[in-house]
Image (cartoon, rainbow, N blue to C red; front, side, top):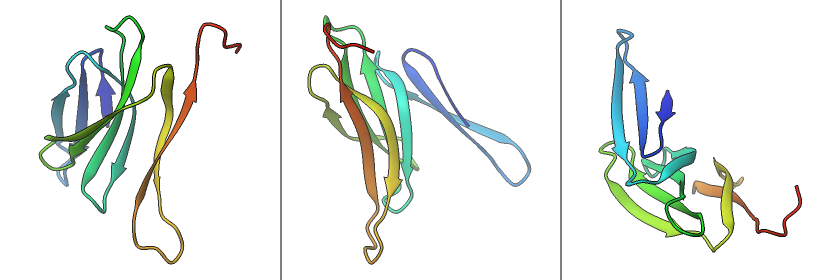
Length: 111
């Protein structure tokens, strides 16, 4: 169970007794947009948007899946937006990969 508001991400799990456990992760005025769990590295990737800048900036932030402590952050290019996030692996490769689909938009972009 994942919920969010403009500045936080709440992650909830149900235990064997059907009790809900919720942890809130502060995102410092960044809005969560996409989330992906990487079980192999025990990491959560959160694609965020910071609309407080003159140009809306987007980032991919990484958190420890157990403690939810921040591990790293990657700021995307200007006008680049994270549109999707998922994990995948390849046949014959034991590594797990994070895939972030992005797109660029600007004032002259047509939809």
